Length: 477
Image (cartoon, rainbow, N blue to C red):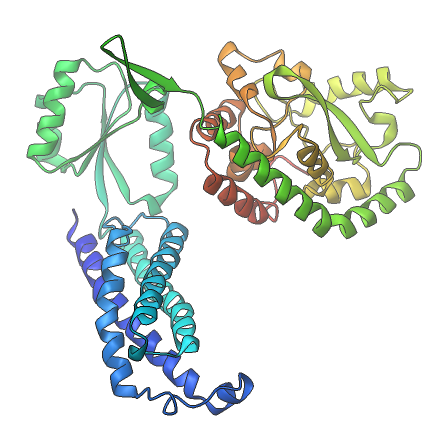
């Protein structure tokens, strides 16, 4: 580990302690503020026999327990490249756990303390103070990383395939990752690696090729362990799969689990979909009414809702509902009397303006859009009617993107993993690049979602979607 990382990790402990103590202090003085006591009709703390010295003594005793909980939640990670939003979530969770313990302790020993207002206020303020202090330390650490190369990790890449190129591009274009590539080699022979380490220094080795012989791999892992070098590798699909170990006729047997969306997982996801879709329909109904009116005023010939046939779970066809954002004469619909001309025009646009590779297409600066259509498609308002698809069960709130029949027909066989669960209104691909991703990148993200689904992951994707909708698509007009 880098000394700078050890320093910042160590300094977080006293910083958290100080922030928790300050939060307790702030909560006390807020509680004693005359305007607060008047507004909430509270009696003074002296009436409850709560004195400042005794209160702070208890706060300073409780603070180390919060530090212990933070440590158990993994909040003293060494690396500078940790995700700040995940850290914030952990601070909230750990502080809440500490609060529950304090409430239980007070319930059992009520004479210790009796102000519920201070406990709740201290909880809220502690989360804010700790997150703020960590944010400042994180920014200082990143500044030192980018401007002074303090804390940078010298990485050696091993491999000779496309994975190496992807990792190399990612590291070069994202300095916040904290990596500097010292060399790229095709072999895992220790003689070569030792020479590179001697000349350039190596903190981490990332193996990008699965074709390294086992005997070389064993020696490489031992070498890394002996010399305190972090060893990482990009796994194959089989290596990332989840397993369940059992016994068959006295022999151990391993089952590869395709997705957690079986049994109770499917039931929980469906319940989540119903609750969220009802809520979202109620919240967005005023917007949907206004959009419906504007669509009809601009182009009265066609319908307001465009029913687009898509392929869903298990290859079953269904109609995805969308607000029509194209002029009716160009819409691909059986109800359009000019369907043949519309299909021919679309083929021309795909050949001339499509900016995506693979079975999917995306037309840049599509001339078929109406004025209101450009706006609602820009912010994905056109997809609001799909909340009804979620409610009726043909779609899920989160899942792979629903594709058309002609797109599915271009799938490779392994792409059909996407059809094993319901398609979603949003998903991993949408929050990671919307329509700007190549199909293979989109497939890998959706496959990760299928294999690692959880309700927490669904909630994270939904929250991320809100922020992504405000960003302009690179492939859009």
